[in-house]
Amino acid sequence: MTSVREEILEVLNREKIGTMATVENGKPYSRYMTFQHEDFVLYTVTNKHSEKMEELRKNPYTHILYGYENGGFGDTYVEIEGKLTEVHEEGIKNKIAEFFTSIFVGNQDEMVTLKIEPIRMRLMNNKGQPPKELEFTNDHE
Image 1: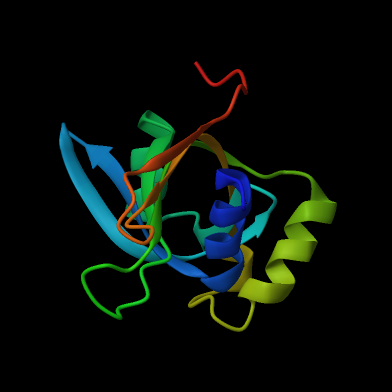
Image 2 (image 1 turned 180 degrees about the vertical axis):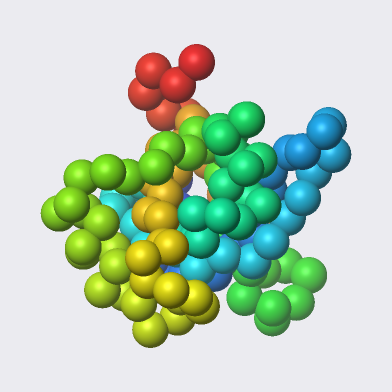
């Protein structure tokens, strides 16, 4: 029998695209994003002048829907609540940039690497079972 950690990692390993929500003036905004991960920490890139960067500077918390396969109503996916920070460490930035360079639209000098540390993940629609939750004890708040 697999643990909820293993089941969530399976979804994170299988998929690379999810929707990431931010808040601006009390209203939610979602966009499709491509992600890489190390264990449960997600990484993505964006333009440093993008609207999402402005929104995340004001409120670094995000909600991500990750792993929907588009195979039907019962697809397994993960809901992720997390806190976003900008990555400044060159080793991580370079490692992540290798993957994103081919898909990043715009000047590479404008690319910002973002790190999403999970607060909570919920495995949804897993073979008709109720959601399974995984909490993280990082100091986010």
